[in-house]
Figure 1 (cartoon, rainbow, N blue to C red):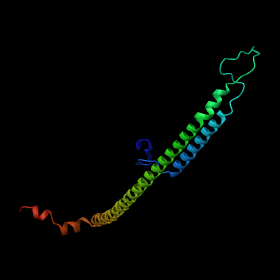
Figure 2 (cartoon, rainbow, N blue to C red):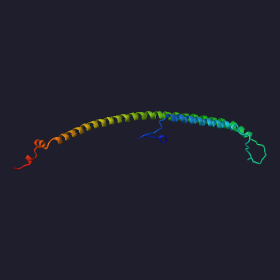
Figure 3 (tube, helix red, strand yellow):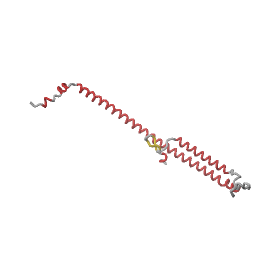
Length: 172
């Protein structure tokens, strides 16, 4: 059952549909279906007199229309209470199923809310760490650039005076 509710939201998978309005609209749809069934059952009581159940009527036939009143009476007495009970049982079972789905959805929403909050906290910590590293790298880059600039500004004589290379290597 969880597989059919799986939805993709951004880059995070949710194993259920988090919209509770969907459950409400499903319940309304089921109630409309029950009302339609009840209307159909009620309309069965009013079978048209033009239907002849024993013979198919010819277009040219002048025979009077007849109904099988005994059959209509048996439909009225036997099938209606059973069908109404069946509809009532179906409504109750659907109501229980919707309540179970609603409870399941609320539990999952709570779990995912905690999971989302934990993920958000981790993302904030990672963002703060990245910001601190960027600041350190920027400071190090500035120090390196100023050192290179100062080094390039020195004239060669000052470099030779500071670090004599030719006198150390000469062999007189």
